[in-house]
Length: 118
Image (cartoon, rainbow, N blue to C red; front, top):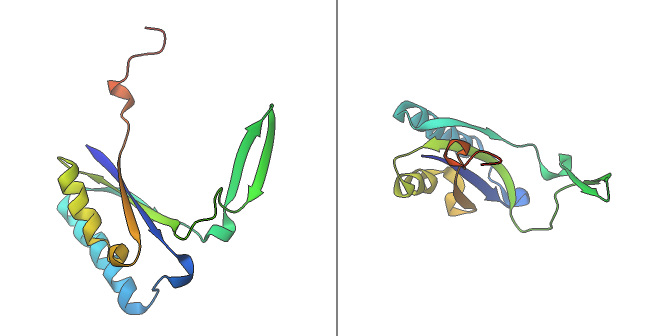
């Protein structure tokens, strides 16, 4: 089963030292070598975000994220694990799991859903 490991941290307090970046590269390499890494990306800072809503047929955009939060989504990994426990173990290894939070969420597989109209 595939899981998204959503990485949240306070942008203003994120450790971007060379040592911490080395931890990120090592984690990514370990995940890829395990065969359970299915992708992932870092996101630009929240100041670059645009929120889109359609109300009464009109598209409305707002600069920044939808809600004010203490932690912001900074990136994600996709993992292919046998179960939730394996996904949690990978989430616990993410370098900022001790200063931010990692949301583990299973991906919805549309192949398992009934087809429209049946």
